[in-house]
Image 1: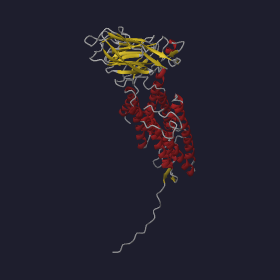
Image 2 (image 1 turned 90 degrees about the vertical axis):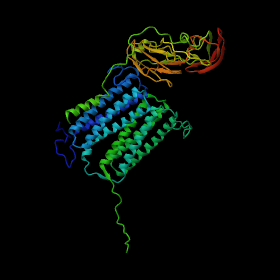
Image 3 (image 1 turned 45 degrees about the horizontal axis):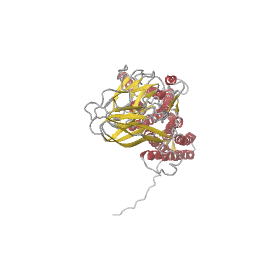
Image 4 (image 1 turned 60 degrees about the vertical axis):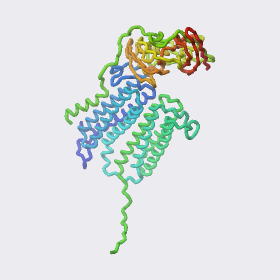
Length: 329
Length: 260
């Protein structure tokens, strides 16, 4: 495979930077996009209460293809898309192992493969052990981690990564802002997963107030988790707005466009969260809320990767020689 | 990368997605007839403290029962075909002159032990509904679960005192047998494939219980003389209790009245 426009593998690598492998980059991007679809379908399984509609695993009612009726449609569809993502990840890992000169990227590919295998096993365990909260939450969080791994693989094989040979100085703190936003969003997804799997999605039944007050009047575990998720939404909003502000200050459209899109997604996500509560967890807003959360994480993570690739740390304050008193003996 | 490594990776990835066994089919063909669900489960076994007293009564309902809930069965064409006119669920069923499907049992006042009958109680999945709606078993008594439908079901009780299970019955005529060893009132049971399917299992430590019929009447037979607390349970209207005293050979009355 060589010689197509945009595919520089025939050319020599420059100063240890690998040639651009367009096909592998696109394959990684497709795997990441399919993972987002998988997260949406997984959200459908919980939103429709179909998590246990297929009581066995790895087969479904002893079959590879059971009748797609009722809740089986959602659960088995999730298994089919998961198998597709597993196959794509396997192919990507093998391809990367064969074609990638950078050991770090090869390790990343193997990590993604290990994650998707662990995710499949966690999915099976959650069915077999009847949705224990810890396993279900781990399944939800590993899905997001795997998504980030695949995004990293796709970005590490991108033309932008290859071409970023002389990064600018990060004078506006883009790196820190992007990383902070990513960590806050990941934490928010973790709280959201706990809320979802302990059934606390309607523990506070109104919006934007909490049982008619600013602070919820009771402090049971479901209410506290739900309220923490609402506070987390504000933190995410602040973190993404901060990232966008720094991107604007840097005047780099590669970051301002992504930051603006992320801020729009966060607004949409808050509206979906409100709709989830106000509709009593209707399937459509609830599932879109899960998928949009993953998209925000993916966007923040991509921003972080780009910030670390396209910006180098600002040097510390210039070292000013300090006159030391001369001690006389 | 060597061929051996490649094969190892392929095997590892295939593990979660490949099949490695058939369905856990416990009893393929329908077995001998099981008892109907309503107690008292054919009287107490030999050796237990029984008597000749009984408690009977009627469960009445005052007020207006909510309109039946219309159920969409289109998620499963086979269920839809079984109910071409649609399916309705009436959780407060007082159309027969009394309140149906109220579980009544002796809550306290009994002494002695009551070994579980060996004859199973049947929970049937028929017409994409559970039959009966209220299933009563004695702790330790077998519960036979049958799929009479030409579609798949999963059976998923959600007990709190007994172990939870979730089993699939993908083929018509499949049967499974389970037991609950601890008294628990009530255990909701549902099918995650067909979310409208819901019933309740009452697991009682003795044989003195009953479920009200269409006309709201019930009867608990074979009681020894004593002072008892009787409890009535309804899935929507919750519980009521009464104190009742009976002597040998006597028929005591205990009516319950629910309001909307």
